[in-house]
Amino acid sequence: MGEFGCIEEISRHNNSCLTFAMGHAFNTISQVTAPLLAACLDPALEVHSGSFVQDCQVGQALEYATDPENAKKLWTLSEQLVSQVFNV
Image (cartoon, rainbow, N blue to C red; front, side):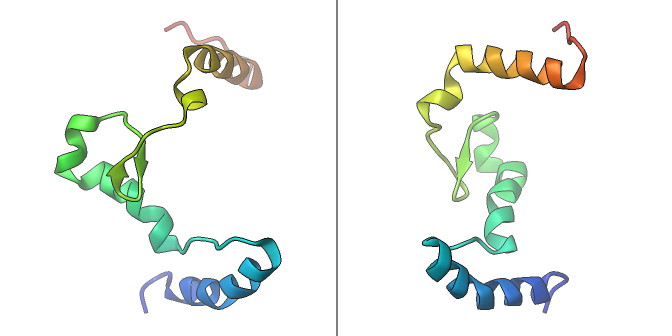
């Protein structure tokens, strides 16, 4: 068992209970980290820098996630939350 093996084992065991109770399954640590590692380390994804990665492949982001108006709103909210204006 790896460093997080015991957590993954608990996750596997409890996932069926959580799936029954909440109606959907939760991902294991390996499933959650795989897309991040692929985005960082897979040379084939290098040409897609800044893209949305889903299931270790370049995915299609939802429309609201690429809306420039939403980006402006998020930027403004972020500045308000940290009480700092970033001049970029």
